Structure formats: C-alpha cells, structure tokens
Length: 394
Image (tube, rainbow, N blue to C red):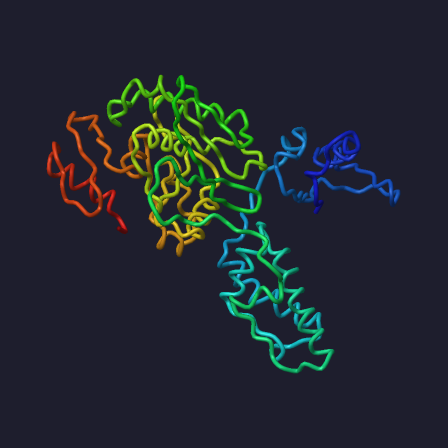
C-alpha cells in the first residue's frame, strides 16, 4: 500500500512516478530490485494499493495503469455512529477517563459534525472529541469530580464558537434566489445562486470566481430562457432593456463544474418573469442549449447536503436514476427526490404559476399555488398529474 500518490507533482515526483510505473509493469516487476535492501524481489503477483484524496492530482501516466475505486465520504449519521462506538471510547481511554467522567449526547455529536468539522472522513471529529476530553481531564486533575454531560447546547464552553455555518433552507419563496448543490472533497454543499435585473442593454454579468465551464453554463441557460420567453410570459423587450447580474456567494472560493446549469436558468427565468422560486427545493443538473438536463456526478453527496440543510425536495437529472441506490435509505425516505428531463420540468416544479406546453397534445397546463385548486385550459387527467407531481409532500 502506497499513500499520497496525489502529491507527486512537480519535478520532485518524477523519479517516484517512474519507480511506480516500473512496479505496475508485469515484466519489470518480476525482476524488481529493492535498492534500499539490495535484494531482487518478484512483485509480479503482488497487489498494489494506491491511496489519494484527489484523483485530479494523480499523474495521467499513473492513472492509465490503475483501476479506480472511489470510496465516498461518510454521511452525517454514519459519522455520529462511528464517534459513539469507536472514537469517543478511544479518546476516553487515551485521556485516562471513563464513561463515568464524560458522556456526549447524539445531538451534540451531530452538531460537532455539522458545525465544527468539514471533511469526508472523521479525523477532524476525532480531534474535537480529544479537545473535550482534555478539558474534562484537566477538570478531574484539579479536583472537580462531577460527571460532564455534554448536550447540543453545551458545546461552546468546550469547543468555542462554531467554526462553520452551513447554508440552511430559507423560510420564504423569493424572486431570483435558488439553491444549487455542489460536490466537494468534504462531501456535498449547498450552493446558493442569486440574480437580479436592472435597467440596461441586455448584458449578463457573473461574479463569484466562476470557471470557464460555469460561465458557459450561464450563457447556455440564458439562451434557453430567452427561447422560452412566451411560455414564461416574459416580454421580449426585457432581454434588451434589462441587464442581469448573477452572483454565487462565498466569492472567495473558486467554483467550476458542470452541475449548476438548471439553477442558473431558474434564477434567470425568475427575475425576468417576476415569479418566486420555491424555497424548499434544491437542485443539481447541467442544461444543454436545447433544454435537456444532463447527467451530473456526486448525487449521493448532494442528496446528503440537501437533507442536512432541511430541504424537502431535490431535483436531479433523470439520467442519474441509476445512482439513487447510493443514497442512504433514510435520506430517500425523508427527501423527495424528483427526476427532471428538461428545463421545462424544472420551471414547472420550482417556479410559481408557470404555463407548461404539452409536447404531444399541444394543450397547456397552468400550474397553481398549493392553496388553490384552479386548473384552466388543460385536460383533467393531465392537470391532475401535474398537480400531483408538484404537490408531493406538500
């Protein structure tokens, strides 16, 4: 087993890469010479395990000879269970404590995962538990013999102020604000997208340190919304008389990747049509110029992030249906996972009062608010299907 092969960058790692390539060649590895021991070793039947945190940093010449096995990060519930069963007992033993000296509730462990660590594994969580144990051991050494029972609202005296404040679901539907989902090395994150319009000449501005892929997604989404202006009841003059500013908060963090297209298209449609976006819906998916929602990666982590933030529904590409088995069962039961095939589906599910044309029959459906039962200009069966699709878990 060789760890850290994603750190072999620059000239310093070239020699190591050459040795690893020799190890992976069946003919060369049969006559490999260990220069440290000065002995020949037959490694032709050995299994080489290489570990890396980021596949993008592994040299291409090495990747070509490897079979990649991706190990996903732990879910929040899994981290809590690992901490309760293994990490906490180990830290108690290392600090000379027992269960009679310290107990930590599951709610406190969940808050430690959510607000004091940001990682795919549990190394940071173990450090936070060690910090609590040190303070309890110090109290015991100075004559305080009471048991320390740590609940969720008692973490700050032990760990200080919260280190992270993850995005949470909003309380109200707003115009031009939508919740996207992003994959990171530490798991999934909520990526809020904001947009506003102002008098101008039809320019589209973006801020938030976007990469080239996301900038192109913005252009594609804007073009598709413009092509569907009649359906969204947007005046054609709006595209010429208004500038649109699209902003991705946390501007100090570079952002790139093919998964924010439908979120951007939704906020553009929202600001130009003055229709609010449902606040309890998160989404991930790329959009093509013809409005198709394209497949994305990291569905499991994104679903976990949406569930953790309190969203009730998550829109994902229908092409990712095969990845649903990777989402934990308890998350699938609590989070309404809705597949979408086109950008029109996204408009119907996340925007208020959108007229969606039926491609087969040419009829129209007017999507209505949850507190109304008015459906016009639509066949009864199609209307019931759309309202049923929109009204799940509402």
